[in-house]
Image (cartoon, rainbow, N blue to C red; front, side, top):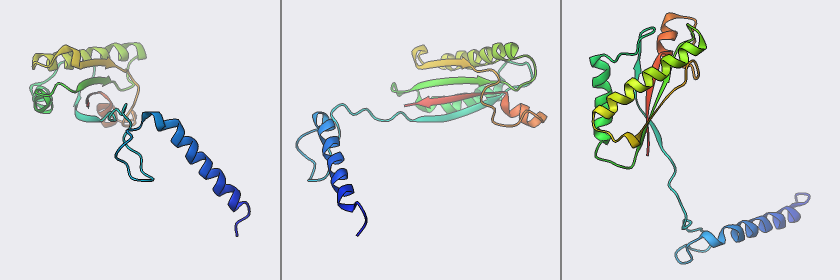
Length: 159
């Protein structure tokens, strides 16, 4: 026999009763079998974020190339008929230059991508753009290749 086993079992049973009582007001009464819980009436589906695409930029540049626009268009168009999503345009830089300039540059890049998305016909209430400067590196800034990877705009879909 495990020391304190009976006490632990009684304590666990008490916690289960307390949990049942705490959430009891939010449960659908008919439906669940004994020992199962129904879905709460105030249930909200979890938020799902998906990376749609990523666009990279040259040093100190904010312009989108035709291939960048095609990449964005291909990622956005399949979602255009749906009204239950939000697009987040997050722009980042490498660590060359000053933090203040990098933050301004990231805002310009985010806005450039957002304006292109709006030109495709997406409602402006469904797009949010933000420049994050040097935050959230995805590669070391110690090589030109790493710096190139960090100079990016990510387009996230939230549904």
